[in-house]
Every structure is written in structure tokens, then in C-alpha cells.
Image (cartoon, rainbow, N blue to C red; front, top):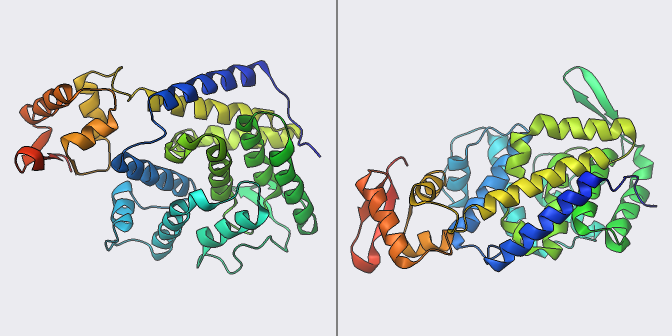
Length: 319
């Protein structure tokens, strides 16, 4: 059975806009980022998804854990991050249309955090915001049928993958198949579904924008619940994806000044880089432009130099 939603003018405009940006991202090879930018995106994705769930670790602490360094912080928060790192390291191995793969991802994500991982709940649950119950999930005995139908829908329905991924995200949150971890699983599996058709989504931390618009995220979920129709949530998420792609495309090298490129690098978690790694981030600048940028950064005190000639490294002064 197809989940209820409407294809609105807003949805059509957003899917067209996203499709155009995906084509541009592919043309600029932004679906094949540098190792440093790939690592940065993974950190941002993990940080944003877990922050929504109340995790207190910073991007710097997540970076340290990714580098196998010791971090001081709440034990459960550290375990959440370590689990998420394992999941995102294996993200290419998950099968978007497989319930078994979906459960395996939950097992990795929630290992050590709850008693029953990778298993659909056997109890009734309600979702509470503050002191108010905002959603009563379907009975536990219905979950296997509902989730099998949902996976059949994303595999067989002919609507665009962009729309189906949003529908899956909403419907999964509605069903609430696990005792805990449903929010992070909804965001993870939407990425898995999108990656199957558009590899750039592995490196697109659109969860950062969800975190920044967290109130809108929950408002869209509640409005879809109220109307028994996922249209409001689809519109919200497509807008997030469109904005995320716009942000990605702003950093293709052609549209930025030297000042803007240096400001962007300052906001990355990476502490140091070579000229080649700088050019990997801004793929359409020449080596001479990169050299001028880096000299400007050094002259203005943004960067420090370590090493000489082809071993030169640039270190951010604020790190």
C-alpha cells in the first residue's frame, strides 16, 4: 500500500532544483571529494545527527575519536559516537531495500546503548515532547507488516527517489519500529536510499541543516501526523536537501573569492593541510591561485607554515 502524500507545486519545484544541482555537483566531481573533505563531512554528519538526540560531544572530540585518540566525556555519548563511526564507515555496504540490512545498521548504531538492538519492538510506545504526548506509535504486532510494506514501496514505486526517501524517513518515524534510535535511523536510512542513486549524498552532511532547523523538523513531523499525510515533511526535507546542495556548490572554486575560501577552511575541523589538499577542496582553482590564497592566509595571520617546498604544510592559527 502506497503511503499517503501529495505531489505539490512546492515539491515539484524543489525536486527540479535539486536535480539540477545534483547534475552540477557531478560535473564538478563533487561526488568524489578529497579524503580530508570526506572526513570533514563524516564528522559533521555524525555530530549533527547525534546532537539532535542530545549528544554533548563537539566536532573536535568526534575528530579525536575518529583518530583513535582518548576523549574525556560522558561514557554513553562517547559510545554513541564510536557506534556512529562504525556505521558510517560501513555505509556503502548497506542495502537500501533490505529489512535485514536495516536491522543490522540499528544493531551497530545502538550496540551497548539499549538491550535489544536490531530487533523491532515488542511493546507499545508513545513519543513525548516536554510533558505532552505528541504521537502514539502503531501496535507492536503491526510493525513487521508495516515495515515490509514500506521497503516494498521504496523498491517498487515509480515516484522519484528524492521523494521516496523523504516518505520513508517520515513513515519510519511514524511506525517507530525500535524502542530507541528511530530518529538517527530515519536520517541514516534516508542517506542510504539517496546514495544508491546519487553517490554525492555520502559526502553531503544535510543533517547539519536539519539540526539548525530542528524546530521546523519536529513541526513538520507533527503536522504530517496531524494531517495523516507526509506532504509537509517531504516539503521540509526537500528544502533542506536543496539548501545543502547550494552550500556544497558554493565551494566549487569558481564562485568564491580568496577571502571566502580561507574563511571556509577556517570552519573545517582539519588542523593542517598541503597546497594539494587545499586544491582538492576547491577543485576548480589553479595551483597559482591556491598559492596566492595560502600566501594571503599567511600574511594575514590566518595560517602558519611548517616545512619547505613540496613538504610545506599550512596550519590554522585558530586550531
